[in-house]
Image (cartoon, rainbow, N blue to C red):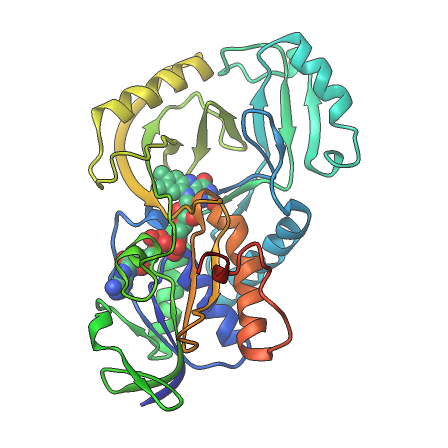
Length: 348
Ligand SMILES: Cc1cc2nc3c(=O)[nH]c(=O)nc-3n(C[C@H](O)[C@H](O)[C@H](O)COP(=O)(O)OP(=O)(O)OC[C@H]3O[C@@H](n4cnc5c(N)ncnc54)[C@H](O)[C@@H]3O)c2cc1C
């Protein structure tokens, strides 16, 4: 059998890239060993252009956000599934000064496209502990990653392009024009296997800075279903419960959930919320984050038949569509260079 591309991994990176390649009339085979504790299965899936303690615009937001809206809406239609949920993010202010500052900052050209409203104290949600008003952001929301992965898997299976099995790198063979694996010949192989890439003979040198994250599933009938609350912790409305998160741990990279993380999250939730909730579940995953917080995209400098789409870190939902598209243009249309800030050659 021959194909254009073999993809290793079908988390967010592999799924996004697979459909971008298919849309360019490329054939492919995806190898994925499904892991309920993979980063994509655990993630909240939030996209938010204004982040961090200092609340600044994220890197390349003006390019990434229009792109992601277009991409996920189109993919929903293609897969016949609903997973893209634009929703406002509500960030309560902790003081009247903060409210005043955002009344000005929210009108600046850099921020105005992302600010829906600077809500007054009177408009505050009653479930919030602080009543100094809130910053309501737009071009925000979440992507239900499990639904994307399931619907994409079904689609690929119908094309006979999905193999539910582990890829064993030691069986990879280099041919004159491309590679072969277990009888399948391909022009290139693209590693989209998240944090597992660090065990690769070819890519093990890439300087990941993995970070474990834990989330809680919570239940409450007093939380809003039409917005994401976010300050210290996020509270995200899912179908029949809420997801709250997330922790950051650079030391303990096991996939086990911990009481410590549950305690940390409950403490943050109690600071954010004035209402009670019940914890009904807890999950942990490893974010494939990198030393410079930029993805690893491109072709191996010594093995041009090996490519990588990885390192999506804490913001995979907003980064994957834009940089997946860039990689596809580079590989297929040969029309675009990989942005030097994400080109993995920067670390070789
Ligand atoms: C707690 C938590 C919260 C998060 N919240 C957000 C958020 O709100 N917004 C956001 O944008 N991002 C968030 N993230 C980050 C986001 O999850 C990642 O950026 C993204 O999902 C990474 O996707 P990936 O496909 O690169 O990796 P993964 O999701 O890890 O997928 C890799 C896939 O490859 C498979 N695989 C690995 N090795 C092999 C092999 N040898 N053979 C076959 N298959 C293999 C794995 O089983 C898996 O299915 C969060 C992450 C965590 C852990």
